Length: 432
Ligand code: XMP
Image (spheres, protein in one colour):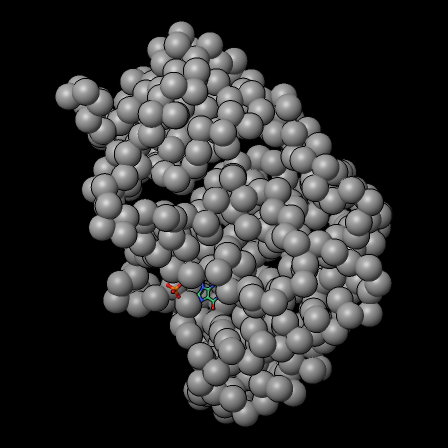
């Protein structure tokens, strides 16, 4: 292994990720472990240089106060404690990350003698070695959505095991303009992956016909996706592993042994119990910005690596109510115009998420001197840190006018463009 490592042992802290990130900010790799890790398990971690024990308010598990075992204290590695009474001495955790990093600097470099060798090239080299060790000669299957996480996993696994990987890209007909084509171009044509491309658009659209309840739409899309994926998997022989783009926040938010669940992630707790595959999750210790850095280091294009968040049900929740083909095309075409103009005006990296919505009502307009009755398009653009709250950024009038003019002249059946000015709360980011 190429990287030194500091283990953060969770003794009930709510800020384990802050500590791991602070150590990584010092250039040393760090991972978080549950309170019940044994001294032997710690000793087996390659290149372990030191241990940080993180106390905190969640230190009672099943009615018992958890703590640092004598065996870990005596394991031979330097130990630093935060918010944990160590013979009456307590190192209080500083309030912000830059401070945490300062408090740990001398421990990490002087006591642990760790080398600041955490960088993407070393991470990738280590993961390649680990994946090869885990998978051996076996075959691995990956659902490649074209999102950041699954794309980076695909690129990493291609480097590690090449043709032992099969990627399945299901086009559910609700993707943005040009997305399925880009997945095929980058992975099949440029990276020479085994890629099964399934155009299931018609199948999804007919399942969704007449369904207007957003949650029902989501359920249908999710369930149908798994069905299509399973059908494709059954056609392939000898698959033993399933790769997933699980990233660190997915695991943390799904709850650790001491912290409560924030929200469940389908790729953490939602897999069937009788899953017949072993999981390969090479990004599961990375934060989102690190996943993007990994993708860049692997040579993926910027618009894939810095892709804005896109919901699993895709344009299906932006074509409001029961999906119809004409409105779906209006969403897709107007979204493409919006994205193109945001790119042209240098707004793409500055606005967190932006897209269009087409509601299921018409309004009166006038076209070619005659009355028309057509759909409106709504522009939504928001800035946020964690998607829990969101603000609407000020957008140059020139951009908004250009987008409006283009949508009205290029997108069929649309006679009106509106801008959604609502923050979250009270609105949500999506309309459904
Ligand atoms: P809301 O609308 O809840 O959106 O303010 C917050 C963030 O979540 C995304 N979103 C989804 N993502 N499946 C997803 O994978 C969904 O069903 C879904 N609904 C909302 C939304 O795009 C925004 O980034």
